[in-house]
Image 1: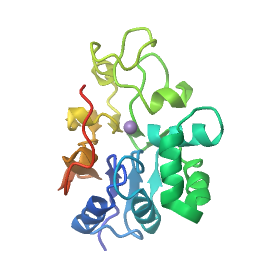
Image 2 (image 1 turned 60 degrees about the horizontal axis):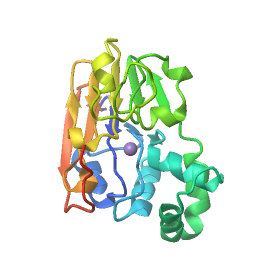
Image 3 (image 1 turned 180 degrees about the vertical axis):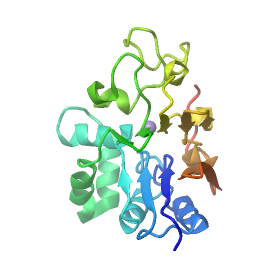
Length: 221
Ligand SMILES: [Mn+2]
């Protein structure tokens, strides 16, 4: 019997076709492999429902991404994210309630066996357990104070991360992946026409599938 793998999949953003290809390429077996999505499984791309269906078939886990976070905030009446929420509601139809119930269970991070997985990153000034969900799903850069976590003029948060524990994150497609000894970035911009990436552990192998097309334009940054 093959040993169990942990497979962490980068930001899918509704690219179900590419996800399906990745599952085939890795020969993922839900009874043998542990699959974890880094968040932002849905929205932006062409087939969020298909991506969610594959997540279910794989009996996978997922972290909360900023897109699922925004959807929950909208449903709870705290944010106005109506345009995306309406589109997703239409796409999921009578499965929309199940989508909401499921993403409510997704954690902001998972820490296990020398590995920390989080959608966007960790603040250098706070333990991950004390970091607000809004920051875990959105941080890109560090300003030394924790006031502006997005300013592209500041260095990335992982420049301040010196713990030997491996951090795996997604969210920042413009970087097209990060590979350091203790930091791996898995958002390689599939929805923007680049690639969908997965990290296979314990081998630390990165497997990519090329996007069929650019489903939306990349933001400058
Ligand atoms: Mn994101």
